[in-house]
Amino acid sequence: MKEKLKYLNNEIKGMALADSIPYIIKNFEGKKVFSTSFGIEDQVLTHYIAPYAEFVSTFTLDTGRQFNETYEVFQKTQNKYPNLDIATFFPEEQDIKTYVTSQGINGFYKSIESRKECCRIRKVVPLQKAIKGADLWITGLRAEQSENREHMDLLEWDEANQLIKFNPLLLYTLKEVETIINTHNIPLNSLYKKGYLSIGCAPCTRALAEGEPFRAGRWWWEDGKKECGLHIHTDKNY
Ligand code: SF4
Image (tube, rainbow, N blue to C red; front, side):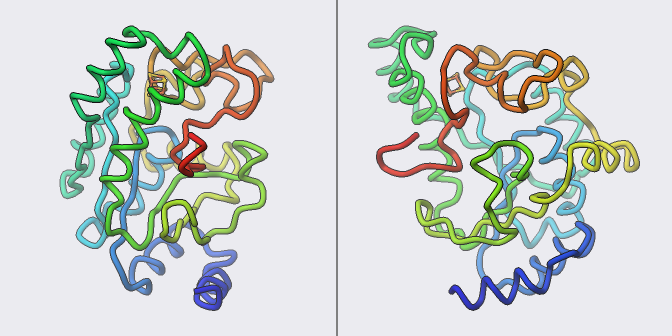
């Protein structure tokens, strides 16, 4: 596995998205999935994956707490890329009932444990269903987004999820991502221009003030790492 990853990383090193994405889709054997939350990075990836839609299972997680603007861009994306079938995964009804009964509808503000439990049932559990059986997961992670992501590779083994993660945008800057969006007229969440650079659930996302780090608007009432657990999941950490 190590050798295979090294080889593929070398092959796509320095390639533009228009080349690296089809290269991996054509040359990597195994089930490939792409997760989109309709953020700016995922929209760029959608544009390049859409021509190969039949070879990649695209999915989104509907937590039930998203902004209306996110559903709007979901619809616009389906309109622009009609061949792309975006599967939607939802939380388990019983998990939500149990959580709301014990923690309250907005229990995530009470404590970090309660917030992580909400992310677990609304995101991590549905994600596990979505990536079940997958060998390669295409993500919109960029090194610039957080210090946790600076040491990642374009392709790397994800021990927690037991698959390979492909991060085609890893070395792209936000400016470059914005240029691609504008050049190809790709649908963008209308909240983006209002300062929402990283968009998650509505109660847990606020706009960034000038100069704030990329993920400062997520769970802004908490200190420490701004992760929901989708990309750092282990049994004890989400
Ligand atoms: Fe729950 Fe907030 Fe996590 Fe969404 S981001 S799953 S509302 S805690």
